[in-house]
Length: 321
Image (cartoon, rainbow, N blue to C red):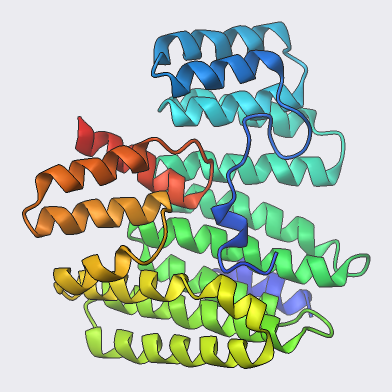
């Protein structure tokens, strides 16, 4: 962890596993209805009319140059179309036009995700750090949410970094997220165990990527034990979290070269676009190109603006040619 991150943690004194990253962000931005021009652009994009969608987004930006909501929504659609530089110009406008610190933080988070679509861990972490710092300012007024959101923002940066292959930075931010999240005052037992589950889950994936399969398996078992303890403390929360265990075991199996196990586990892990990409890669390893392409088509269809989509949509589109 860098000095700035350590300083933040020193001075700092939804219950879903990937709550911050698994929810699609609508092209209207966080909060408020989507402008009609962007709604039309989104539908054109879904219909495969990319050139027309791009023209509609640019027209909406020109028609409402002083609207942070339009800037935020346009940036999201531009990222989905692979126009990252143009998207970041829009998000910078949203940041500059933000009327409150909270609105500015939301726009900075969108900027972080724009860099994620380019696999840029460093700049994603830079902007997530800004949002993290905003939530530090809220710890007195809204301590329960503020500590949780600090953990979420750090984990969101970490997720982008692990997917981009920067394992050291991913580890630093996952640790930062865990240490922030558990500081929530009066934290419920199940919620505290959730942070433990997330931390073990992250360490298992990182060590698997580093090729240390024995250590990865230890973290898998620790994550499984944490999930069992969550079940004892909060059955509803455990039920929400159980799909993320086959995601983990499939991930570790994939990086161990056990593709049959990985396939079986990923098939139980839900329909997240990142999982679809992992399924596609697993089918490729097993020699089933048709099923691999089917999985990539599902991944490429995502219109979310979050870490799973930021990895999956560009990756899958390249695979599909």
